[in-house]
Image (cartoon, rainbow, N blue to C red; front, side, top):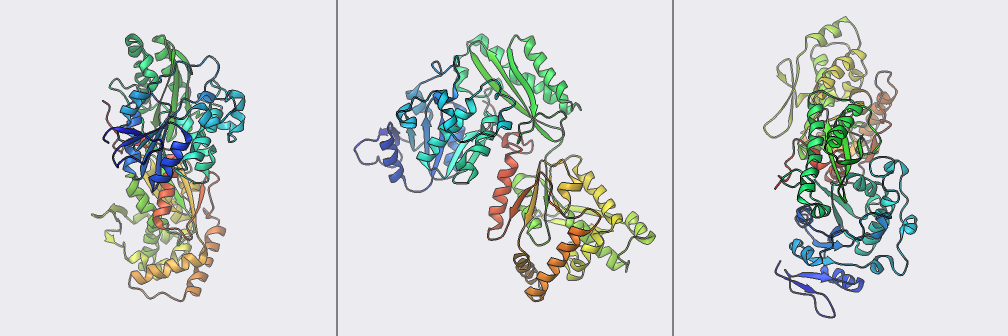
Length: 537
């Protein structure tokens, strides 16, 4: 950007110049002339490297980038640092160099003539009480209601296609995701950005500027204490009480005043008595006049995504694409059952549980590998059956084979072995209920029988096979659904804490986008040990 201009009763500045907006009318004029989607970065000023990372993310997503600078009074309690919060508008303009416009609204611009004291916080969107029972909730009553109120007003006025926010305050991000109408109703999309840290490990924060050199050295012990907890997890510790006390003891020894050190579930923000998968260890401390937050996501294993649903809903395609996007392994459990069905057909093994089947299962060697182009290769007893298991005769046999207790016991044991280290996306019919009940994300994909029949016919045609009439395929699908749902061994059903995603009328890419967003509500981008994040300064 080359300089900046103030928008008044003049034409829009030439392309490449940042616009400074100081009234609602100037904002409305800029929005009307901007054209295309608006990507919005709401801030309270005191911009730093963390904010610059948000701006880069907004810029990288395309569209025009708007940054707001507004210190919101409704989220500060009496005695908190509202009056001393860093306010440096000229410096903020410099820090927002890659922005199309910076908006400096006043209290009147946001709240009108009403006095926006904390008594008005109830006029915002309703908040889920469970989300503010832990972490900062008990320590800052009314804070999150004030955040919701101001964000609802900001988004209503800007109407952005994308809002970009940091993961530094994970509780705030979670409250907004689950309670802000614009996000819940998908009127705009939220792009979370990982925490950016200083060279000493402390998260970038506007409040850091208020620390003296000695207080800054003291504050740097906060991320070190969280690192100790992470090391304890790597050494095998899983008890939340031990992890919380370890952090608190380290901070107490440095004379930092600790509000809390809590291990909670990332999505529900409820306490985790035992670490199994991914959890958030959040800490708040006081350093001199400043209250600082930090957190660490602790992983006892890499995350697991379990995708269930009836046949023909696109599970395999969605799972493969989602795994590739997240850098996780694709565990195609349906292919495992198909491989066993193929083996039984090849050996003329009757579809029933008996000693001969047990012998077949005990001597088979089932191997899953990944080909040069990311495709899953299925080998059984040294034979590549990746294509053969898709033949119609195998497809017709799979439901009866999968219902055999002996088969399910053997394959479930193999699947759980894959899941011990995590880091996979699995698909099948009982992944979230029987195989991986502690998966971070459980999805139940569904679609109408007519839509699934159409997809099956298209898939068969693509493979060079001649599909039967759609009515026949639809009847076969309905029969398979009935068998899968009524069998006594691991029947098809949605996990109680699973998310239903209907795939009718939407593209595969849209489904994958939705699942990626659901995943990052549970596992932040900054917590992915397999992902590249911005290095510290």
